Image (cartoon, rainbow, N blue to C red):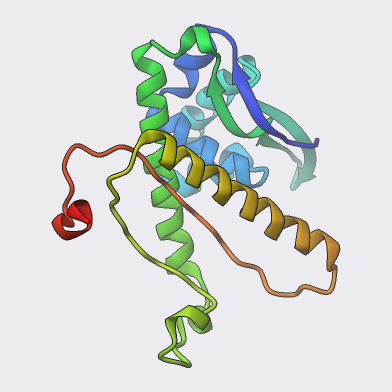
Length: 200
């Protein structure tokens, strides 16, 4: 199965299904790669029956798909994967509370996933070899800016374009051997914490 880049949620039932916090957590893993119910059960420390219930709900509403069956020790293992890497409510669903909560929950899960990836990265990923930060093959920063929404959207469009360019370069150069993880979140805040940044 080839994952879509974006899946548009067209009906309220689909929206309700993905707005559940546990399903959002499960979906984060199923976006990355196929998992069985047993694997997810171990990951979350929950009963297999509970995980299977949620998998069935996600599958019933077209959010995930059965992608592989495998026999092991007399059991049939079923592997599920998300049908897309991202899920966005259609315009007619945007005013529902579930849309806002599902979006907020997905941002929180992206941050949690980034934390997990940082903790499991090899030691050399954080080895310091120079005081020249600009030349480090890693980045971690926080920033708060006061700009118009239009300026912020313009910046995000440039960022997406750069990311696309970077992904394309890896396809153009099959000899690339180093994998990197990138994560970005950006959203409106109620009050700046870095007062100096906000005033500049």
